[in-house]
Image 1: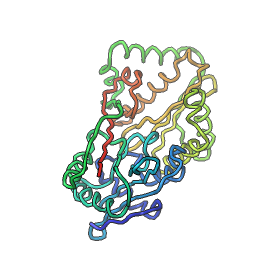
Image 2 (image 1 turned 180 degrees about the horizontal axis):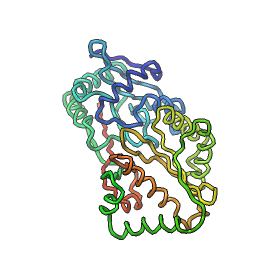
Image 3 (image 1 turned 30 degrees about the horizontal axis):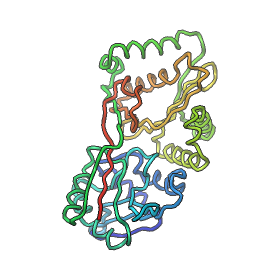
Image 4 (image 1 turned 135 degrees about the vertical axis):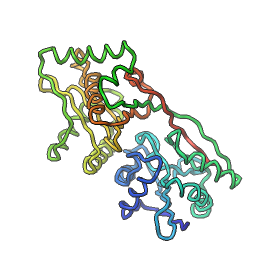
Length: 335
């Protein structure tokens, strides 16, 4: 394979990049070219003060066969190479290559990084899914080089596998929780208070809906602190890109004409990837977060989505809705 180091984000590779992603076992929305371009522009919403782009592409007979979307972090001694998207706001990350090309790509990648980028000490890859074949490929390549390799769990990633039918889904979860979901949804529906939920569809109203979502997010003090100006810019760019690509699901529950709850998800590859949420606490008597989540699960089953991925975080409510654990790992290669 022929390797190339890109020290600026390769905007011209969008088509080839996303086509390769479709062949990659870890095909997740956070690896799309548009998302990582926005992330690089905002330095992860301000998570990184500085970053040096170090994207590596590999071609086999002219065909794009592998991408290592990396950057060099000089805040550590020695510097480390990390995946664009790291660490906080991109739940799942990985290298891009087809199953057939992955091991040869990684075998050539490590010596290329050693020769092309001076001074780095570790290849520090966060947010790899536990079933990523990159883990085994990295270990094999590192051992061949005589380098160190270690990997360990860093986060839970609860996921619901959907049966494709709302009643079947409810029957498969704990009886007490099934009753609680039904009770809370019925209580709002029978309250006599005007209520509706909807998914944003109108491009003309998108910016206003994003504003409304961010306003709900910042009612939580922790999320308000998270929403720095740079993070707001990152969120806006990510949502606009997802909407343009047809994979944004921004859902609101309105009660008495006011937005009471919202969920931001990616509707991608026949799955829902639940990314963030917001809540108006003045409506807590109606349990708006639970109710909207119930509507989304019903919608996902009725529309034949196969998974409802809560992504990183082991909050209790995820398991109460029937999620089971997957794990996210960090893999470190040491020269």
